[in-house]
Picture 1 (cartoon, rainbow, N blue to C red):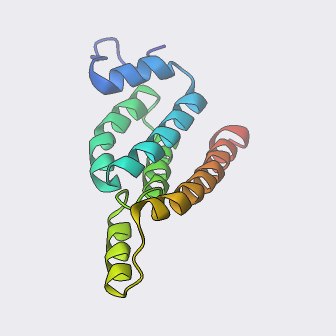
Picture 2 (cartoon, rainbow, N blue to C red):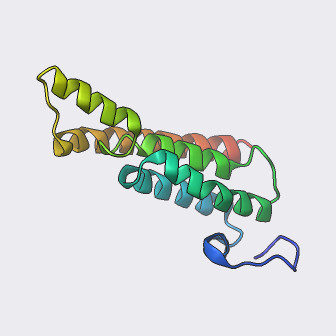
Length: 139
């Protein structure tokens, strides 16, 4: 259910996400956390966050506008930790691969991804539990 002013346009990606989420903040939080993790493994996390920040802002406004809203934390944790999944997910990973190759210890994309996916899955699961505890169970 839409909680913002009745004259607000619910068009675009933020409107579609708000319609999918409905009033379920927990579901929306987990969707944003997981979706951000997956997309940040494919797209570098900096442009991903730059693209998602206005969308998240609109979602937060629709859900009450609290600056410490759980959606901001879901975006930050998902994008940051999801960038660890692949070598192209974070700029630091690209730098590390270059340093490793220069020192004659090349790390292949799939070798990096094999370990990166495990690290990402574990840290996103821990983040999901943290967000649930902090903003829903103990709030």
